[in-house]
Image 1: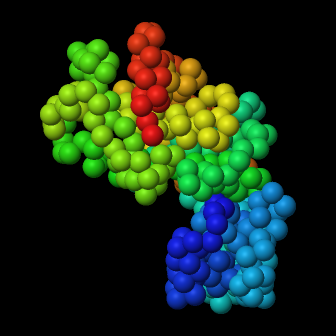
Image 2: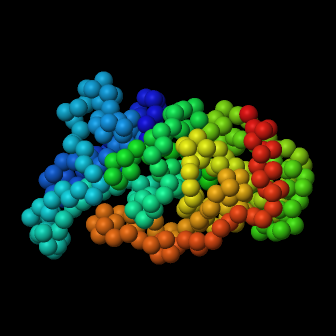
Image 3: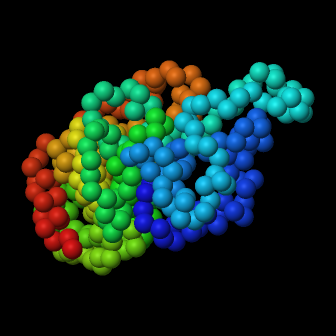
Length: 327
C-alpha cells in the first residue's frame, strides 16, 4: 500500500534491516539460493513500489538502497528447486520447487480475483478492516482518509481503504453483549441511536474525528448496543467502499462475515449484494492457488451466497442520517 513517507515506512525499513531471518525473501534465498522480492509485499506498507508503473518507486533511489533490494518477482514465480544441501537435510526431493510467495491479504484476495469476472470489492475484517476494490477504476489517493493502493498477485494496482474495525468493535462494545434481536434492531432504528466516528481517531476515513453517541447510549452488554456498534462498523465500511470507487458485489471475510446485523446494514447502505465468506482458510487457499492455479468455487470458499439486504427502507434512511451527522 502506498502512502507518503512516514512512520510506517520507517518501521518497515528498520524491521527489514534488523530482522532479516523473519522476511519471506530471506527464506526464498535460503532455500534456493535465488534472491527475489515479492511485489505484493513491496506494495504493502513499504512505499518502495510504484504499482501504476510496475517498478520500484523514487523512494528507493532517494534512500540509496537500489543495490540492496533483490529483483522484484510475481508471487507465483518459481525461484527454483531447493538447494542440494536442503534436500539432504530435509529428505525432500531435490526437484521441490519454491515459489516467491505472497502477502497474506493478497492471498485472501486471489481466489476471488480469479473467479470473478465483474467488478467487486472484498472487505477483509480483523483487527484492521481492509477494503479492496477490483475493477478498472482510478481513485484519488487521500492518506488523511487512509486511502491507499495495494498490489495484487498479478502485480496490478488495487484501490484500498482501511480502518481498525476489530479494534473499534472491541472498544465500542465495552464488554460482552447479548445476541441481537429483531426488537433490538427495531429500537435502535426507531430511536435513531447512532455511534459516530472515529472510535479509533488515528485511522480510517474519518481520521481525527471524535466519536460520540447520538440518542440514548445503549447500556453496555445490551443487545441494542451490539446492534448500534454493528451499524457503525457497516457504515464506516460503506464510506471506505465509496472512497475506493466500489462497484458490484461485496465479499466479506473474517469476523464481520458472521455478524448478520453488520451484513444487513452494509447491504442496505450500499444497495449492493453482500456475500459473507464463512471459511477461515482464505489465505491458505490463495497461497495454494499460486501452485495449482485452480480456481476455487465460491461454495468451496464458504460463501452462503444469499442476499443480506433487509426489506425495509428504514435501514437505508438510518444510513443516510448517519452520514449527514458525521464530521
